[in-house]
Picture 1 (cartoon, rainbow, N blue to C red):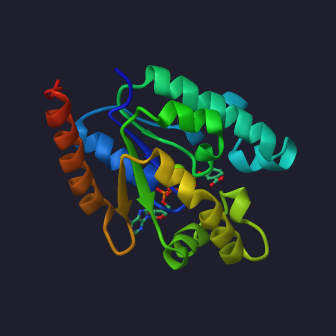
Picture 2: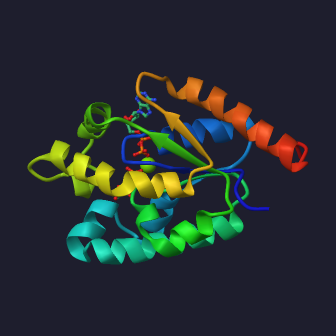
Length: 178
Ligand SMILES: Nc1ncnc2c1ncn2[C@@H]1O[C@H](COP(=O)(O)OP(=O)(O)O)[C@@H](O)[C@H]1O
Ligand SMILES: O=C(O)C1=C[C@@H](OP(=O)(O)O)[C@@H](O)[C@H](O)C1
Ligand SMILES: [Mg+2]
């Protein structure tokens, strides 16, 4: 059947937080490809970036996403850079994809609270975040079925909006609730 929803967006958009709450609300299992990569590699993402480098992380991520899309029937949250892969974007083309967006100020604020994201650990995380948004916004939009702005919106309120959209999609495609 495939995932009921795949969540994409920049770091700090709330993919992990909102994805997990959405799965709870829909009473479906939750999966996050960052966690899959950590499990496969046997080390934290920051250590993969430092030890093996970003290209190795991207390969592991591409494989983790393809595997999860094939075998996970619940809610699936991706890492923020997963859409950089053209192969991944092709796989997402016929999936119900939620793009959680976040503005520069709020995204930098949310991710600034953590040191777990190696890409944003440099000297000027705000500039890095801006470059990342400029590069990736078209890619998120290319794969998105729905786009939700998350600035000033609580995760539970985002889940409310998503439950409605997913139910509408199912009604239109003739798939009743299972
Ligand atoms: N809608 C929101 N409003 C306020 N804070 C949020 C929201 N969504 C997520 N956060 C916070 O932002 C941080 C990053 O969230 P996370 O779910 O890890 O994002 P992502 O997986 O997209 O990188 C966490 O501290 C989380 O609590
Ligand atoms: O944007 C990115 O390139 C990354 C985002 C992270 O996931 P989140 O978006 O869940 O923070 C994680 O996959 C890795 O640090 C790289
Ligand atoms: Mg995450």
